Structures are given as C-alpha cells and as structure tokens.
Image (cartoon, rainbow, N blue to C red; front, side, top):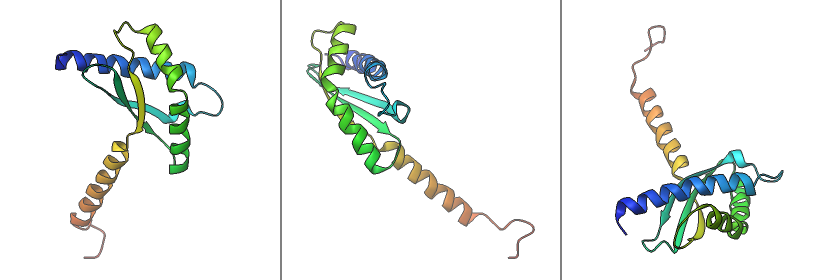
Length: 126
C-alpha cells in the first residue's frame, strides 16, 4: 500500500474513531471533552491500528478513561465496520499520547529561561 494512501486511511480512521467515541462513550461516567484522538497509525496491511489519545486530567483519571476506551474497543470497531468501506476493519489498540504534556514542559522551561535571561525592568533594583 502506498504511503499516501495509508496516510489518508489513518486520517479517515482518526475522524471516524472520534465520531464513534462521541456516540458510544457519551454517558455520565466518561468525560468526552477530556479525550482527543491525536493520531492513528495503521499497519501496512490495515489489520491493526494504534490509536493515540490525549486525555486531560490526573494520572488516575487518565488510566480510568484509557481502561474504559479499551473496554469499548469492540463496539468502536463495529461502528467503523458499518461506517467505513475498507477491506478489513483494523483491530484497534488504544495508547496514551503524552506529547502534549511533554510540549507543555518544554514551553515552561523556555519561559523560565526567558525570564532568567531578561534584564530587570525599569523600576526594579539591579
């Protein structure tokens, strides 16, 4: 399968999974606004797909929500099977994407470095 087609299928899966989450996980226990599907990475034969999700909250909340996503995996796959025209519906694997937290840490480090390097303002003693 060509790389561009695989990229298009990953984008299609990402959008479809996000929509499926909205319909399936829309109950009182699950805070859907805290979950973002950040990336989908499919195997070249489209048999398996890793779904990267960013979950806002503390570590305990993230683990609980990730467990709930994993528990509803089959339901999500069946929705994909109905909604998408693919030769195979990939087996989904949900993993936590911590790239947002890493980015926030890097931004905080840069901000702190900027404040340390800046000269004192006009009214401050030197």
